[in-house]
Length: 399
Image 1 (cartoon, rainbow, N blue to C red):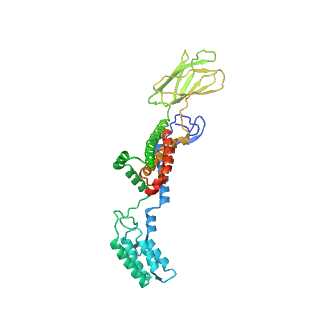
Image 2 (image 1 turned 30 degrees about the horizontal axis):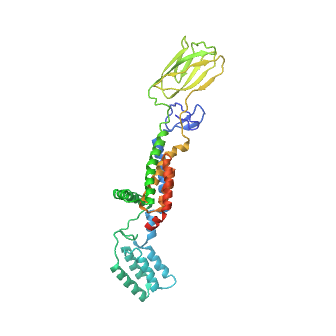
């Protein structure tokens, strides 16, 4: 068990969830069983949940998107923007005039598609709102003419279409990754000269790999820190007890937990079948001050403790335990931070390779700096950022 206040390691019979008191600093805390993997899993879960909540807050849910696009009247869905245009045109005048019909028509053909929702909405508007005869005739004629000559696209972009595939921020990210790292695109990158932005994407791909490796390495550095040694099995401690003049002492009681022995004529003692990583030894003899010693013990080595006792009644305390490396609390979060930052760098890499989203590519560079990557990753991210800034116009032309 490790104290959460002073990081002292000690043995306890208390189980998980029970209160325990540290023998060094007397602070109380609840026994918790933690491992590096469990700690990383918990922190990644919290971080990804925060990212998910942020994306939902910024992009809105599918239900919010439907509310923005559609208006439901008598259990039928209509194009909200068309209805709102008709409502606005009849706020001050009873009839929709020719200019109003032209405004409605511009909205109808905005995505070069005439969806079933839009057809239903136009029919509803013509039934519920009054048009001048000129406006009504013009709208009907223009819709027929345009519908007959328009060219349909392979994939509709009109959000009122049932075939429209809404791309959330998350789905767009996975689509970009899929497009950027498919075999055909990678082959083209190898065959054709790369743009500065694509070189930046390549560098960010390397940053991703280095960031993941550094996260794993840093995690392994702080894993298995609960014990000083791999201490499976029973341990033994022996040694000699002398007085201040160097004479051996016979009959000194030596205690470790519930185990007890006495020194022999040569002042030697032997204690067997000890468990744990450390032990508290009490040396007691009438006429001499009690000596209390904390020491590390190990099953696969020799544990020797030589003791000198002084006459008098004053107790002497010694702590010979070796300090076990313990990371400063924020260091626990660095491994998942490196990994998450490197994943964002990979997303930025896909944006740079496809010339699709300059802001995402820049964000990937900034997170690439945070991914560390044995410091090499941070340097490469800065280089990638410079290449993107120089090649920014390419994103504007592509988009």
